[in-house]
Amino acid sequence: MKTLRPFSLFFILACLLSSTVNARTLKIATVSPDGTFWMQEMRAAANDIKAKTNGRVVFKFYPGGVMGSDESVLRKIRIGQLQGGAVTAGSMNKVAPDLSIYELPYLFDSLEQVDYVRERMDPVLVSSLEQKGFVSFGLAEGGFSYMMSSEPLDSVASVRAQKVWIPSGSDVGEAVFESADISPVPLPLADVMTGLQTGLINTVITSPIGAIALQWHTRVSYMVDEPLTYFSAILVVDKKSFNKLSEEDQNLVREIMGAAFERIDAQNRKDNIAAREALNKQGIKFISLSPESAEEWRKIGEKAIKKLEKENKYSEKTYNDLMQHLNDIKK
Image 1 (cartoon, helix red, strand yellow):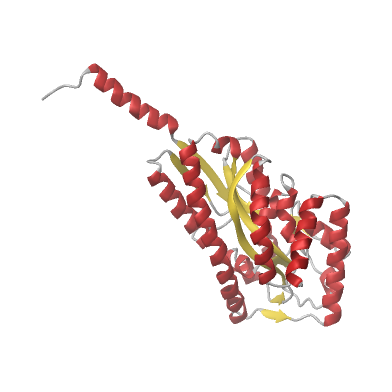
Image 2 (cartoon, one colour):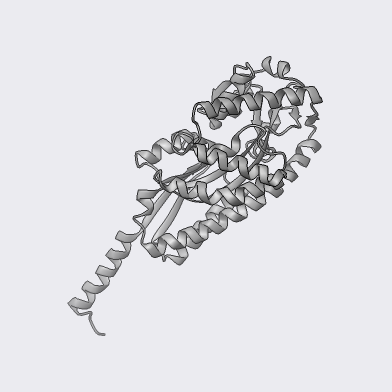
């Protein structure tokens, strides 16, 4: 039996050491519960990336809010405890305010309008995020959000009497409720269920799929069948951490995770339609607003948008581009 020459042994050890040094683990946190389609697709993409990079790039996920709210996740990314997070686009408002512009109240009248605008603006928004120090792989639809409550809400006045949740740090939410003369209860997303259980809040604004995935639907009885906002979610990775990958591995991660987010985006729309039906079957009562109440809410939305515009929450170009696209499709 031949023994390895010293040079051969050195070469093998050097290769093994090089492989270990070049291996990168990206720790990603999210409030999305494990087992959801969102998590299934991200895990599948991560497994594919690990296989195709021969273990050089590994994703480690922390789902279900174990790392805290979106704001906590972003803070932990800044200090290097995490390398990324799957968060709502709105939670990025302190880093990249333009990213949450789709959440302006009563912005879209239909999903057709959403698709038209997103096709033209998504690439620009994602690209601008890299200038803020984050890499992303595309937006995933969260869908239209609706007001859901333990009490019937058929007017603005009826909402003022409720304990309404607002996401902590939500510029849009604060503007809307201030314009409606409503005092909301700010809470991180991870604390909403506890708030519903204890009576701290009794009213939330979420998508049908979000209500079911987070089990909030078990604590409400009514849904106002009037979409308030359109929201999306995004996987962000610290650009400095991402740049430590080889160029080849970066391109591979972008390709595989980008394809995963296209599937998540498409599936979430189907799931929201199914979730609406599920809420109905589970006894949630859908409330249709009177024309007068609907108009009152829309005036509040317009007032909130003007407030945000005055406070320069969005760049003038992004806002103007968005409105131009909307005008184009409405013609």
